Length: 476
Image (cartoon, rainbow, N blue to C red; front, side, top):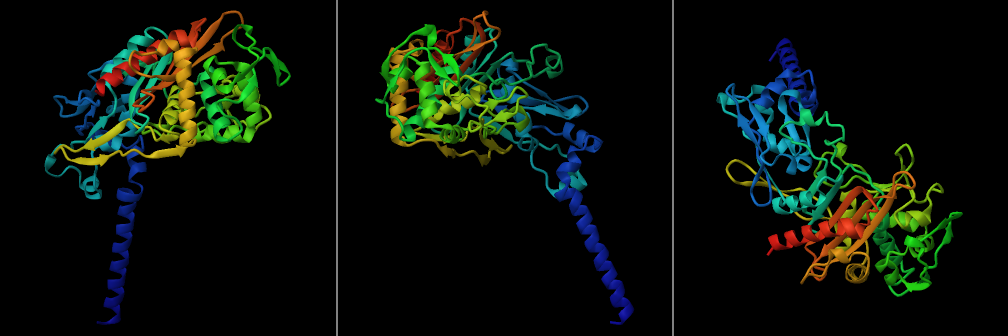
């Protein structure tokens, strides 16, 4: 073969290689960026022609599905409306807007496209059908949570502490995801999922975290004696127990049962800043929850500055004593506090929370299964058992007695966080807990915002009890 032909052959090979590289860039490597470009009208047109998969509850009931219009395009409809709006979210394909599971599980719901299908389109004109996403959400317990919250602003999160599967995620205000545009105009931020984004002072529920750090670090035992006198001076200012009650020397178990502030302020200070920070991080504080949910719709819990920046316990700007009782600048989401309860319930192991259980294609074949996985080992099995017994005392003898259930041992912790202007007596009412204590199947967190004299044991604990009762009944 002569030289000119060889040179021509080399040029052809080079041009072909450049063509492959260039087309691969847009169809493979940069395909997501191209599809996400708002100027890409082709993407919107293609999306509207996809029969997105369904989103289903744990019992198989449909939470989201696609409806075909006369023009051959599809729109989403949500049979349960506001009941699951925060968790499921919405998808407005024509405007490229989505939220919740509709966003985080968007690729599965659309169905996978190969590089060839994105180049040549839908061969033969067939409709692209997405996969069905099954969740762990329980409709009956979700209804109980909604009824319990009523007209209050608040949230309920319940999960299986053994697997991390989310059973309940309800927040009020909610919205009708069939009409999210109308919801966007509401005056009370109803599009915000308080379960994952709402930041509330956790009050005395945080004493569960302080107790775990105290016991697992070896600095304290359930029978350690601490003086519960009131008031005491913490960071240069007086700190009192509820109603100013002075207890004298008490065990750590008694202090948790009666939620004695002055004891836990001292415990937190003795445990120390680095250790408290370490255990908070083990529980998930200072990180977004590892949930299959859009990151932009979640918020990390922790101490925060006035401008909202996270502030770590090792900072001298943190009042360690008050943080240890859930005060100071500490803010937490209901999702985070459900994870706290779940870690104690599961022998000190915190499981990765998840909404999705499996994904099925249109032939009924399972294409993805979400298996339980450990997020962190928070504390030893022995310490978790000790703390579980202490939290059982809270429900049986202390501030959480409204969470008692006949025939079921419940462990829990109440929280009452003062909020609003001085003199208005407004509180955020909390309860976190789990049941049955011997073999926990449900961990729950409940918060109600701005309740007049809103003790957690009075307002939040009964809601938690009903949610637990419903979920345990569902599991039998």
